[in-house]
Length: 352
Image (cartoon, rainbow, N blue to C red):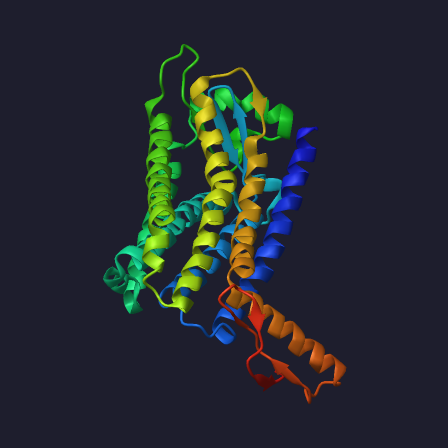
């Protein structure tokens, strides 16, 4: 497939991801605030904050449309100024912002796992997620994103060697002059095989950030998977069911970001270390970033029974309104979860 067709494909996927993420985020927040009445504690605020972060991530990917082309010992990270109405400096800031949002998103996934781990194994420490303290975790996530963004801006600034290394390829493939487009470059080795430590430091920084967050995710996930049965046996039936549902969602929230967030980035930053003779637009992997936020929200909406019930209730209410010509004279019951996650209708309420 020609490179320009790959670029059009990534744009299309980014657009679809942005649309679905926007709709699902609005739906999720609407249901959480107005229809999901069960008390999730401070985890409710974490879910809302993460959905907003996911929307920001998808929006930045759609607006900035970052592109990466990997070539042998390096890659060039840029955006096409011909598709933008703002200056190159603004688009360059957009690239840095996109990287920062990525770092914050990865970090916030780890924060969610920490909360679920503490909720099961050390409940008193949940107080560190309550009221104003949740802002501390938002600041922690933001700080990781800032570190990621600073690393991109500081270590991957375009220099004369990288211009010489990538200029011909960028001109032939994309019809652009590297020296006049907003972007960053990484070249791990010189043509003589010497290490360019400035660019390598960015790879090391990314490895440390991703590694630390993924270790937290795996540690908490492993502990919950092995000790969950014993711990939830001491909880009430309702709490036990809720913890089980959130654990199922977290299992998927390990698998999905592994393939849609971590693996694509690992491929991009580690390929140059092998100094292979190849040239490929690895920016196609950013398509996975575009659809991740929508998939993450869809997991919660599907697995957690309260959200399924809320969606069913809203749809039934809308159906009743349409049938009755705008006046809900019929009764619409609000379903709740039973012990086996089935829905029952214990009482009736008038339609919304």
